[in-house]
Image 1: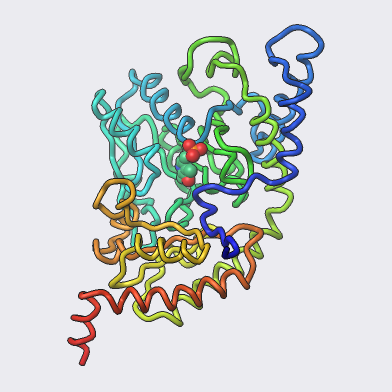
Image 2 (image 1 turned 120 degrees about the horizontal axis):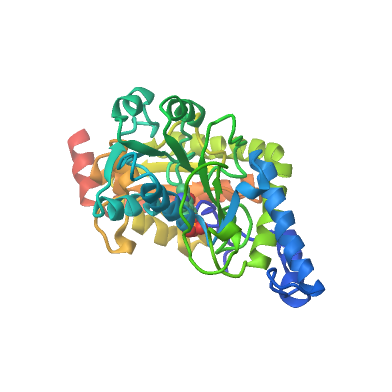
Length: 393
Ligand SMILES: *Cc1c(COP(=O)(O)O)cnc(C)c1O
């Protein structure tokens, strides 16, 4: 068996042992329902309160502005659908980008069928939105700007503070999908004028199936799940107490380790980028070289199918991800790679490797060695590459 080299931390992360440890008593010992009145349930209620405070602290928000959900997708759905409904009297126009996660894009499509007008902003070749274009897109009907903090595929980090300023100047709500940014980058919701923010625990070494939506006090927004009075009557359902506890622990851990962890990741990220782009021919880095998530590497190998690359890497115990979407039943390459202007054939040959705090230089050296072999082998089998080589001669 090969050693597992997990380089898909943008898809999900390992739950940290201390997070699991913090969660365990809330399965076994303190299993009470936080809404119950007896003393035994106080443990559960207090644990939820503490986690809410831990998370609010990370964002410099108030605990009562944090609403727990079942993950990033739910938070994104809630922010968009509820804002659309609550601000109907003002207008029906929402501005977003072409590189959002599908939790945003597919929600926008859903809202379009219900009368919303959506502007999908272009991004530049590094995956960054243009502020002038954002301003130009604003109309008197605009009720919401939803732009992700950092992209999950190519890692580009948006000028969130400037976007927030524009939104505030025009009196428009600003939502950001910060699922990739929370715990990786410092976020201050006041400084960035963020009105709503989505996040998910399993992207920061927390458990799966728990997220939150930050909703600034004063923002009019509808309940998402109707039922009991949980989450200040806005999101009904018995709280996922162990999940919430784990999220709080993961958030605190992420903040405490952020400086050291991300400094190390940036160093390894740039090392990997530099080796890949200098030692393998016909490789292109996707995303911004500087305004980039600390752990994200995304490259395109010309004349190669990303899917084949992934399968070969898997046979060596290396987990990565690709911008080619054959596995999801679609022949179209990633919408993000197309939005930064990659031609289809180059987008198909892309590979995303996302590091964790546990990633070592040795892991990356092994990965580069294997990639050099695999890329050469796949190219040798490629008729496109054969043609290309012939033309070169
Ligand atoms: C993972 C991810 C989501 C979805 O979060 P889930 O908790 O898996 O539903 C949304 N947006 C971005 C940017 C993500 O990376």
